[in-house]
Image (cartoon, rainbow, N blue to C red; front, side, top):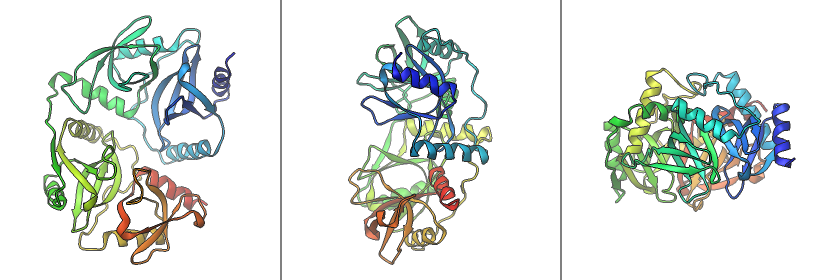
Length: 387
């Protein structure tokens, strides 16, 4: 029997938390094995915050390796236990119980269950268009048909065939896909919102100040890495900085970001994606649903103070965890850790769990963005406090 299949079967029997790594991609899944068959595995997956994140069918041909022990899994087990202890809520309701038979190919069973229930899914394929979301509308012996939903462009309405041989992952029942299912009940009434973008021609302060008055969520793209962007509401602006109260992809509170105005590439004040996130946020509010109630969603920031200096001093005194992006990052991941050796013009970030010698020093003038108060920094602060 294939070694990977044996590892998956052992993980299910022993109820082991595992990481499943795929060929040629950096993404991996963490979770518990629910079912294993000749074509793949169904995992009960967890987000980086330790929240149950629905299920994923992962095709056997897409799996490169299985990890059953290590520092990353220990960290995830701590986060899962913490989320359970603090009663973080993954979804408003438990997922539907859909039994699967190991003796039959899993993908066909999963696809047919999702077709019958009308749930939104995410397909990851080997084709050029790697990620596809929507609803399965037909299931055949060797392929499924997907009615595509493009949250970035409501005019993109297609029905495509996805061959099982090219499908690597099928995600379902996570919170964001639960919200997408709710949104798709209104699919016939969704109207396209033309994107309204303002470039930063040394006027980012004025654009963002206007966004405070509108109270509408916006998207902010940065000069360093505008493939990724911030979505949220502007809380305050001064001559150097703006503070954003962020929304994550599911419309839940995502912490705060202090963003240097000169780092802003452009600001989007209207688009189909912003309409999607706005729907998700309003859905959560209407159902009184907050995934992580422990976070401080009502923090205030005074534009008349030294915003960066005050946050750094607070962080050093109270052991806050920040994510800092500097001018030297060149698209790399920001540094995450606690500030130390804070002076009037520089500071050092000690990565979480590392020795002080591993710290990264920044000049204040280098800082492009500093993020705080999200579930990831909260968990790291709690972990540090327990040591």
